[in-house]
Amino acid sequence: MKIVHVVGARPNFMKIAPIMAACAKYDDIESVLVHTGQHYDEKMSDLFFRELGIPKPDINLGIGGGTHAEQTAAIMTAFEPVVIEQAPDAVLVVGDVNSTIATGLVAVKLGIQLIHVEAGLRSGDRSMPEEINRILTDAISDQLFCTEQSGVDHLLREGVDDGKIHLVGNVMIDTLLKNKEQADRSAILEDLKLRQGEYAVLTLHRPSNVDDSDTLDRLIGVLELVQNDIPVIFPIHPRTRKNLAAFGLSDRIEQATNLHLIDPIGYLDFMKLMANAKLVLTDSGGIQEETTILKVPCLTLRENTERPITIEFGTCEIVGTDSDQILSAYNRIMTEQSNQPRTPPLWDGKAAERIVDILRDRHSAQ
Ligand code: UD1
Image 1 (cartoon, protein in one colour):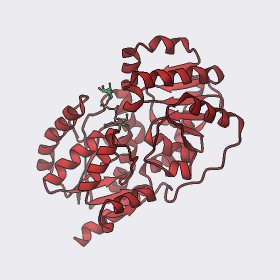
Image 2 (cartoon, rainbow, N blue to C red):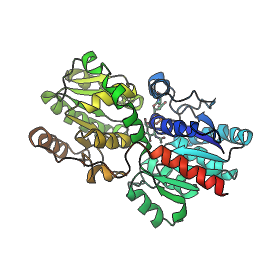
Image 3 (cartoon, helix red, strand yellow):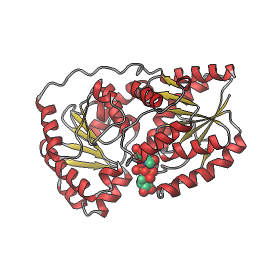
Image 4 (cartoon, protein in one colour):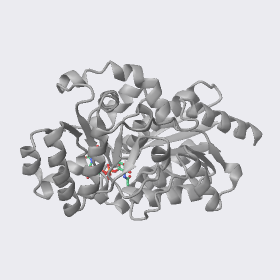
């Protein structure tokens, strides 16, 4: 079986790593890795390949940024000849970024089987670009691998044949569990002069939060208050850095001396930073899942989540972007003992192995 695996943006890398490793155990699977180049900075891409032991991409499409239409179209145009030349049995895509739908669409139009890992997640919010990518990718996929039961339920409701749906667990957590010990050895706490449990970690990059000047202004206002109380470490995404400057908010950040902006950091440093934090504030999807396993309280700075299991089983609380709501949840975390989170079913480090077992079974039955 020949599989073309696709990655493009930062959250794809920790998902593909265990899948490629599980495929590499079998002589009867040939893997080709294509990087679309959606993310291209060393700290957003290459660093993760090195740390997670992902093989160097066989092909890099070098697409970079652009509007949604530009980026999606450029990926499709560059990917089509690759699929024709490689003639794989399947194309495997992960997550919900533009690279996921762009390459998935090319594959199915060429009659190649499409495999989607992290299928079925739905926020119900069609203003999120990722929600559109999820719905469309799932609608055209042949094999759909889900991280949580809500994903299975959504797919069945949308009319997907249940023979194509597999609840296998979470490949992002495979990577977390595999790298936990190595992450524990990171020196990031010493480097940033932090003490365990005495700081918060913040990430912000969703267009709904950082592309709108009023929302970003309001969020910075809340963070100014939080940083009076506890140091806040803020590894900043390129999109957010550009917008802080464009909206004239950089001075406010500079004056908030306990809000520490740092460049994006690698996977191991980031896991160590999160694992030892008092709390995490984020609008990321993957971080909601990682805090669930790390058992660190997480305030989800969004109005909804496509990962409800991180609330039901995990440590996450949806707080939106309203100042009062964020501050009252923050105060609760600082003063009350939190409930003991539970590990979601199948988030045991073996999701990628399950996926590859199913793919091999299906292929040999063809
Ligand atoms: C993308 C994904 C989002 C995911 C996020 C993780 C889509 C629609 N969005 O959003 O789901 O959560 O990645 O980070 O696919 N940039 C750099 N250097 C880089 C990467 C990006 O400077 O290495 C710049 C781009 O040029 C662009 C901006 O950051 O101006 C945003 O990049 P883009 O890939 O369009 O979307 P993200 O916000 O990263």
